[in-house]
Image (cartoon, rainbow, N blue to C red; front, top):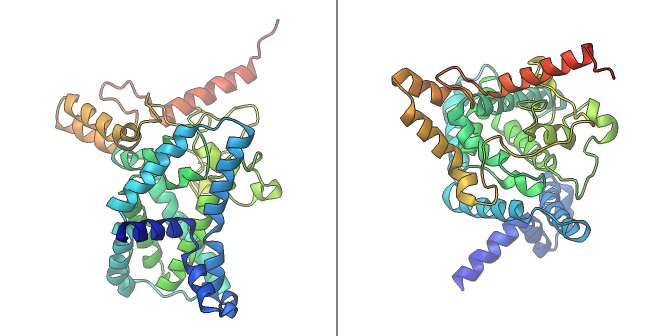
Length: 337
């Protein structure tokens, strides 16, 4: 009975309906007009869309079932191993850093805008380093391994990535004046939208969202981020406001002439849980062991993925610049018959 109760609670929790269910049981429907009530109605949206996306994929075309399978296994593994680590890290940082913050921002519309820009800066830093420092890439690569884009990808994370990400984002936000209340509000908004931008073509064919593509980061932008095409490598690190991508020159629109290829450049079996989850760690260990000298071993850990001690670098920056240079040459000297 205890096992069945645990399973029931996990299903209810995954569907995001536990809070709304508790309100319904009280019979006081006026609670849905409060902040807690509104939040309880928003939580189930992403799980509902995920299930709808899967159903439509089964109806309209053959989905990449291995993506859903592996991401489901990752979700289960993370629920067991890393369930409370990120929450504990955020709580610890609030206790340490809030007393030394420059000032305290309240929950008003202007502080919310300020707070979101600050949050996006913290998110940009964590996400950028997750692509540019190989040790951090080992934590982040699990999220990029799926070779198809759908909402289940939002659950594909190495269990230590959330503590690493929240340490950076929370530190930046607290030191720049965000109160815990404002921080948690932004985290809720960002988490919900961050899941939505993983929506796949089964449910949303054109992810540009019309005029919004010029204002915020859309599913189209995030599809670009998950691509392994040279044009798209290491771009669009923001989550909702793409201001920092434009500031740091990492912004990239989707090119309708360049078909997105999802996944990572390392040869791997995206249907194998162990390869998806631990493959990059294994590859890093091999490179460190084989590298001559201490400094080369250290560089394999802290330099970008694709760095090589003999100078034969295949980092995203090198590959993308070579592609862009070739494109410029082709445009300047088009082939003539």
